[in-house]
Image (cartoon, each protein chain N blue to C red):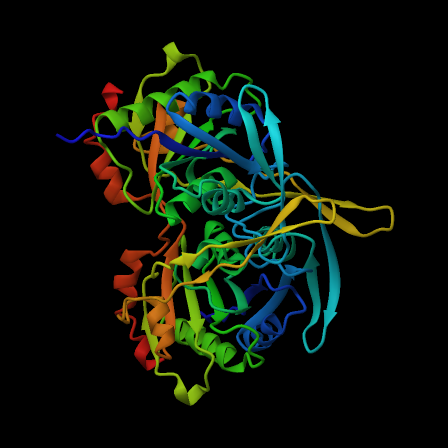
Length: 264
Length: 264
């Protein structure tokens, strides 16, 4: 008779709001109910850094004691750096899950391209590790407990039902910033297209040189269909969008082959 | 009888190697044979910055005189910042094409996620402007003339044959670093998956704190099929990969809807 060894889940937790942000603390605490958690996150806020990585400079790392967590690693680098370093230098025995967040603010539609939180999860997927990005879909909301609870329940459900996140893929979760009772359920969604009103405010420094502040905003989303992440969250659903990191436009690939470029 | 007004093509040129890099100069000179060129590019090298944007700080801009080009705009920001600023503040009357490059080094496979050059072109696509990223697939090669010539020919061919790059899409061009005669032609490709050997070299600063240098490298690509960008370039073809910025994994979307998450 063989005994089944129940392996403790090894989880890397990171974010882009910085290691001292309340969202990562709430997430890490909840994740530690699921397994062994290691936190490696940027020392400073790195929102909107996209999938940047540090290659021309060294990456300094500080060990930090986080209240209620213990030792964590603060990185003078990007969220993607944290995942690369965490998986190769900290979780050297292997990692079963990368969870990034809980982000202060939504990561919906086209915005996922700019998001350090989502890029960190993508980096996990590039390493072949199941990865989840979790965002609270309102800025500077102080309660991350509902979002943490939902991430916990979702991961537990996947585990229980032996549902695996396929290789090269990421689950992007956005939780509306409402009470548990007001949340209508989970919607599996696709990314909506964000339209921006990109504007800059031009100012002049004391020497007369121009500089610009980005002051654009997001235009209202016009497709009222729960298939879209943006609309689902507006309607108080938890949005779950499966992402991958293959940016190939396959439809266009087929079309372009008829463009006769061999004659160009 | 109506006269057709032949409009001069308005082209925004940017890159991630910085405004003083030889690749952008070669590209801009060749593009000015096609229309009116404005250059707005980072003042410093911004390789591997991905799709980062500057939102928490102001973006300083300097006007610069580039030899053989004239006035250009140097930006203390990211490639995506340059496109946002260029399209809203410089080319205020409209823009017909964003061209990013010529990058010092390949932008193939998974690497396009990290690439500032490709992200700048993506930003053009987000604005609804046809966009092309051009890379020379070898590092520190000194001759950008072949790659510039190919970009020029390709855009001319599209224009002549009224072939439009569809909205939300980018053409990612990688030119092998060989002579014009050795280039076998253009291959329409999809992104290959890069496998990395991510490693870090750990060192200690004079105070005993650890820091890391990324020293990983790219593992050999094993699929010998010209459908893949990486292999096509290895075989001396110009690789043209159509990209888009929709990271949704549609196949997984369909699968996950059967996961019964409504019970979670």
